[in-house]
Image (cartoon, rainbow, N blue to C red; front, side):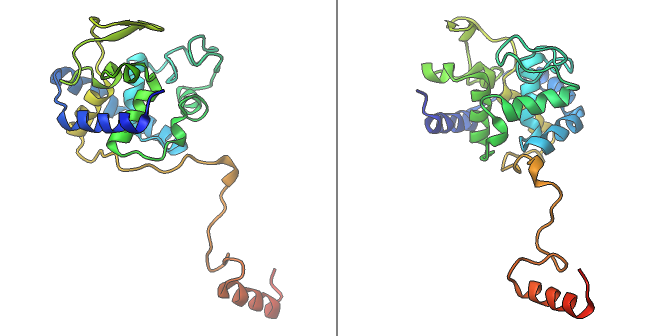
Length: 228
């Protein structure tokens, strides 16, 4: 079993030492992702997953194909056949993305720690921890940086140590996004929206906490003036 705390420490060290090796390519892809940030931000509002993480997953899973599900790259308007299988069909890319983050392992919408190292580990678990089990950097994260040279699962359970992943990894893309917009930071994210929460407001002058002095005053006014 992979120790996720140890993996997070390893990813923190890799991030600290990482340098991009395909800068121009990463910059071009990052710009394309950045231009679509409003769509990713819409999913962030429903799931709590930071939009840059959603964007780089989208690139890795389907090269930012809006016809493909965030979960595994299958068409979102059909029932998925690849893992996670049996999802959908959905009405939109956004609906499929929310399902992938909320209802499918590793349930990224439940993830609370979005510091950089923890975010990298969350992204790695989205793809699987097979590389971590081997003690090697995952190309899903590190392809396109000096932290990765070769090694790739060419199909389920089959690892080729000489195969080089041609795609840019999430870390390389995040670096490029941060270069494009220095305001992008992984410091935290709000929790996913709970549909059962409704629009209930917190304590206020007209809706004080039960048992508070405010509640006593409001009840007294209602008693005097007959308000309900």
